[in-house]
Amino acid sequence: MTLPILVSVPHAGLRVPENVAPGCLLSPAQIAEDGDEHAAAIYDIASEVQHYVTTDVARAVVDLNRAEDDRRPDGVVKTHTCFNAPVWREPLDAQAVEALLATHYRPYHARLTELAGRDVGLAIDCHTMLAVGPPIGPGPGQERPHVCLGNADGTCPEEWMACLSRSFREQFGPRVIVNDPFRGGFITRSHAGEMPWVQLELSRAPFATDLEKGERVLRALRAALDRIDALR
Image (tube, rainbow, N blue to C red; front, side, top):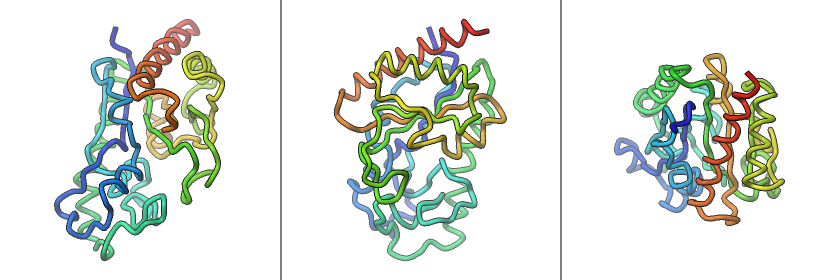
């Protein structure tokens, strides 16, 4: 049965758009590492859910999980990766930044808004996280849990979070944490007024294959939705 949820996978892309590619300093390995490695394989569940939204554009170029006016080095159009590596040979001018936002950022968020509540009652923003915190990001140098579920203390009801947490622990073991190290990013927080949202982060640690991780995610989501339905 198709799960009545909206799934967003904003950081699985690896492509650098042609209009800015000549000035990009990053190697393919750096682009992959700055994004959500393995996310495309783990969250290959479009046929299993009601709505599925993703992009092929690299996070190192356009970060869909940042506010549009976030102009930090690790902001919406980045100047540096999470490892503090420079992205561009020369800073992008305002016209290039606007083109990236207009072509990739705004349509993604508009699509999420369009699908909100359309035969679904819950949205999941799906990510992978480095097993140890990078230099730029929460908890630099600290080992991370296998699963982090984030609701920014309000983007999803606490009763639902308890159902999700219990279901993910059944599949991934005790190393499932809520709101640590990630509380829920811009997508989760900015679209929560449209419907309940949760940010899901899976560690890239090799405790299971990508296929196994994906299967566990689906089983956890099915169990969580059954428990949430029982609350109604």
